[in-house]
Length: 431
Image (cartoon, rainbow, N blue to C red; front, side, top):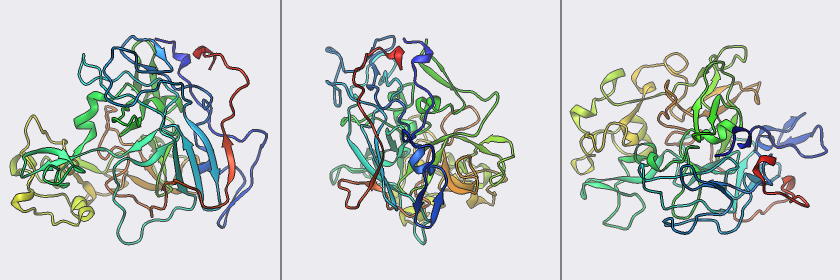
């Protein structure tokens, strides 16, 4: 493995030659680059993406090697990493990336010995984000599959589910988007962290057959690069929380409603930047009978939590043909998103008993927003493990006007574009 200093760290977007940029976004004027432009990670945009295929293996810029199983993805030619281009108009920011991180990706396994057969590959993302986000009025938009935003390194930002749900009639978990007669019911939705964590690489990401590298929860490799209270051991290619002296988490991503996503640490008092730094406590708890929740181990999975009933347009008390499976070692509590209850529905108080609302965010001040903003936070528990809902809840907080931008139908200004060096040496110690 390479030494620790070859894992690129730090650095945010700045347009070369411009010390101070004055921009107008609707009625807002900025004396410095607004965060939705300046937060994207471009320092390593000229670096080829790198993969370690197996534990102890070599770092490679093309993959997979002959002889390894290959179910999908792969990169036979070198591809650049991180964000490749940033453009903007008065109302939107447009981001182009290959979806490949500049930190080391891989290795991936199905179990302790079997190599995962899917490999990352360049995606050619072109996504847009609203510059002037607004809270949703009325019903909130439910998160879909695939990208629900983008991490600042241009890698995929998926929700916490794996797109499988329980089918009561078939008595098993099936793809929610499967064919008629062979698909999940969409009421008991499987957690990717519970069902797929074995296939995550040390940076906490993986990819489906189309090669779209993505994180479902705490993006450890990116967090380390941006100095988000993480350490990295180059000898074992592992990451861990560093909680000795905490600092406010950096901005790690953007949701399609235009609100920022931070790491797990923020100001303990939401509107006081002089308050101490603390882990942002999720507002969700497993339904085990504590905190006023239903004990699903005793009652069975016969009711939905209030947040899910609202999001799905379903009554909480389900019909028999909508029941989920009993809690077992095969499907323990936490296997499904609906195994969690929002504590705010049980007389507990945000800001006192927990920090984050049912969308997994709060209105607060941050280093980038000293006057305040709504912001999502990555959720982890006291041990550093991912905590439901991991990044964003079942619904967006804001009005969703961002997403895929197949074409750009308005005039835009280029803020950043990768320029290829005249000559390069593919020696990763030089980066």
